[in-house]
Length: 220
Image (cartoon, rainbow, N blue to C red; front, side, top):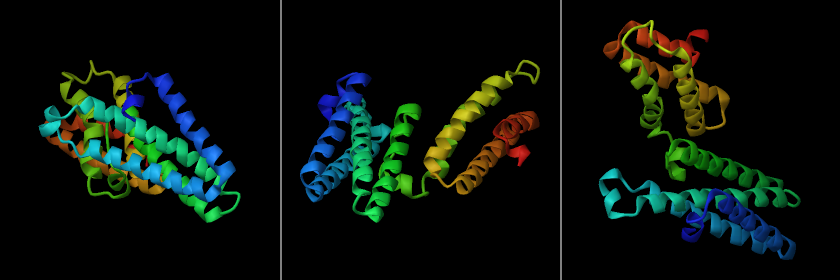
């Protein structure tokens, strides 16, 4: 993984494809061996991601944080490639197993997208639980809050910029919350409500209203 993280994005994709090719080769030889190897590899990838996620800002200087994050991104990409093959090929003999691999694949894909698009590095247990979701959703919405607090008047405010930031925050929150559309929507509106309440106290009623409008909460 360390060697992979030194390469550019195109090379990382190639290495991910190599992981998939190895798994396909193993499945063609012995499916049970392939699944054992795949499970061990995915566990290693998960541990690599956890190690990076547990490094706090206070201790970042004692580690090569950039390198660890590159390793974590490589790990999530590798795990996704491995699991995509496992989900596909195990379905021929075991539907239940295939569904499990597909569910695990989706979790790693969410982790990977949060890493790449939002520079948020979370371990699997945080993705599955919700004890940190409030803090992370607040972090995702912070650029929207900052924009609204920075505006001087209602007239010189660019709502297009706000909508763009809100759309990105919503995407990040839905990756965090999961694929249950109803549950994720509910948690999203709850997060927006918290941010809007903060704005009402700091930025006045117009800032609060602008956020609610851009988030779609007023349309519910």
